[in-house]
Length: 167
Image 1 (tube, one colour):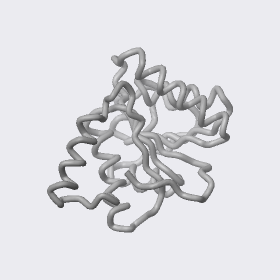
Image 2 (cartoon, helix red, strand yellow):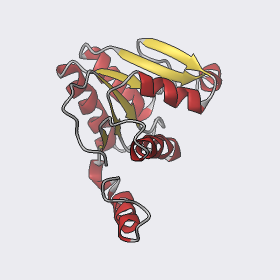
Image 3 (cartoon, one colour):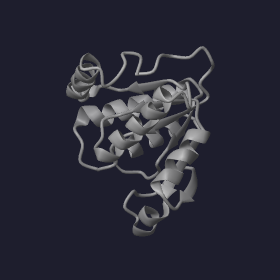
Image 4 (cartoon, helix red, strand yellow):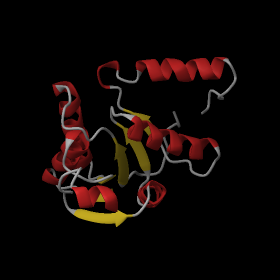
């Protein structure tokens, strides 16, 4: 999506599915990502909780020695829909506040497989990049070809000139 940057990445925001029912390969990839972040001394910022891929990446990151910040919607925290956040937690009132808070704390973004929330977050960040609001690197972790059809759709949007190839 957006090209890599020459500046050092110290904090990364990871988006991904929080549902506890996931394919083994997706969970393994989330765990591996958390381990790699820790090995590279990169701190994790995410939407909080301990379930699904988001739980896997956060647990692996903290076990490896990374600092972890969960930015959690108060409504979800009240209902305990995400499980317990590992390490530090900030609670916010709206999804816009959540994304803005995560944005302010990170140098880059990556999306694991996920549903509508993950897509909303990554497209929001990509839109900001297209509008030159930021120049932070953005990536998709395309586990088992999860994002293949989305990437094909984006290629079609470029071909039909709804997107530029740089977007």
